[in-house]
Each structure stands twice: as structure tokens, then as C-alpha cells.
Length: 237
Image (cartoon, rainbow, N blue to C red; front, side, top):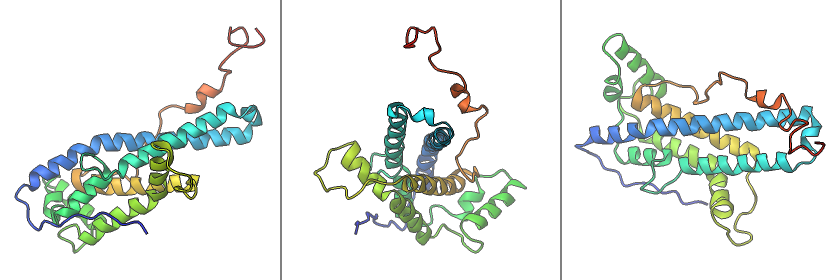
């Protein structure tokens, strides 16, 4: 059983404003990274549909396998970044860990103050009710621990894969089995849900997901041959 790292709890802090600014400054880059990761997943599964419809895409398999392997490695590393526990890391895990250190630093008063005066602050009350609880004045420690466990549990096998196969070459048997695609998807979804929750609590920006709808059809690049007849790269030229 994996031993989970948990912080010492500091009951009071005179510098809550500094800590809130610190975490809020992490949100934009984390949000961008997560949005790009979800976009990569969209393309990956879209390519699976293309391959099912057109088997010629798989003959030979080298190019298709290369794209799939690159996605798996890249997506796994991205997930590993979100759950990085290093004290120097600006990760989602690190942010939740630090929030857990200071009970009550995320609270109803702090959250409502993000919004403009009426009617904006009424929306802040409603948002805090929906995310934290109607009778809650502060974000409970149990919720933070639960959110930490959620991203830890969902990413555990992905993290081990990166540590023992991508970034390092561990001894045979150190990794019992490779993660499955549904586990990678589950880790992305868990990070997405938890990030959106704390993005709302800290910044007031409400998103159900960081998935960004494209303003173009990414499949357009596949509509025409990449190497047309006449090119010096075409074998029939």
C-alpha cells in the first residue's frame, strides 16, 4: 500500500493573502497545460476512429504506432507534472497539499470577496454553496484530503509508469503492468474535475471542464494526401 505524504497542519497564518496570491498565480499555466492535454486526448481518440474506418491507415502500422506511443508518453508525463510532490513544483498536488496545511484559508468570505458587489457577490455565495456546502463557512479538511486522494489514486499507475519506464529504467518487475488507456483517461478526468473546483474557489472562474472546443476541424489535415504524386518524397515519382 502506498504511503501518502501529508503535511503538518498550521492552525493560523498571518499571511493568507500571500498564499492565496501564490496559488492563484499557478492557475493560468496549469489550466493551459490541462486544456492542451485534453485536446491531445481528443485527437488521439479521433485517430482511433479514423483507423477503424480506414484500415489503410494501419498498413504499415509504424506511423500509427509512433503517434500512439508519443501520445501515451506525453500524456503520462503531463499527468505526472500535475501530481508532482516536489516542494519546488507548481503542481495541482502541491497546491492542495499547501491548502491542507492551513485550515480555513479557503473560506466563504474570501471566496465571495472575489466577485464584484451585488449581484456578483450573490453568485459567489451560490458558487460556494454548490461546491463546498450550504452550511459551510470554510472548505473542510476532509474535502481537501478527499480531492488529494482522488488525483493520487487515479494517477498512481501513471506516475509509476513515468518513474520506472519513461524517465528511468527500473529493474525488471519493478512495474507489474503497464497502465491501460482507460486508466490514463481516468487520471486526466480526475485532474480536470479537481482543478476546476479549486480554480473556481480561488479565482471565481467557473468551468465544468478545461476542455476547449476547437474553432476548426483538426481532421482537415487528413483530407488530402500528405505526399502527393509528383513530390520527390513519393516513391512513384
